[in-house]
Image (cartoon, rainbow, N blue to C red; front, top):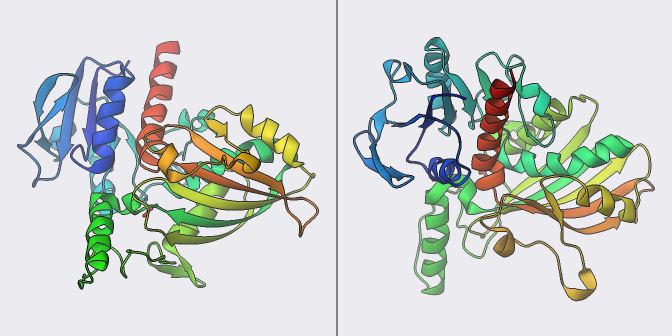
Length: 337
Ligand code: 2RA
């Protein structure tokens, strides 16, 4: 057991869910501390019926902490992770900064749990759009080897934090009232609109979010030969990312076999009855730790192609839940040693 645990970025949207999950799942610990930026330091938060004062994140603050779960912007993670390591604290980091560092394992507990135990003080949790896709690719890759993936994402505004969710409501209200509204979090108005850009321009016409889906998928599945062509789109949905995924495998996987493979995979749930209008949608996946799969069908244009639809709560399995599950893995391993 890690005696003293901490949440870094405790006052953010994902930090709040991590706090809730640690309490709900009765994460073993003797002491818990909450760290955040100077701006939030001194405020109080509740955990398991007690009130705690948020501490400022400084190098000294990590002394005495055995395990920290971090959910901060990339530049903050770049700064605090070395402080934590120096203090002997293991970090599960939810930011994007350390994910592609070759010395840092990138882990989805249902997919590559063994990688977590190779850590050198920090374990990264993948980007939300990658996590749900890779969860669904894993059983197909094991059964028939994934060669190529074409994915279009429909990403909720919560991916851009509470400001994104707020902007959806404010922009929608302004549009309904025929009022002008200045987009701040997003590059364009999100009300009654789709924005085919998440992140900055990265390379060859792809955005940073899209390149994450390519590189992180290969790293987690341990296969550099997997080809991924993503298009990431922001949609006027409050929470839960959806993805339309087309997979080409080396060996043909029928829709029936895929349904059985998905159904047998921990962390996935199949909701797939088109005739009766049953498929996953953001509104019925919100608040769930499961990744939902539906609309499973064989590709009409390619012999070994399989198409499906995938929805997951990006704040939970896409962020907080995955990080807490990694921490649980480490705790179980520590108990087993
Ligand atoms: C987004 N995937 O949805 C990002 C958050 N990490 O904006």
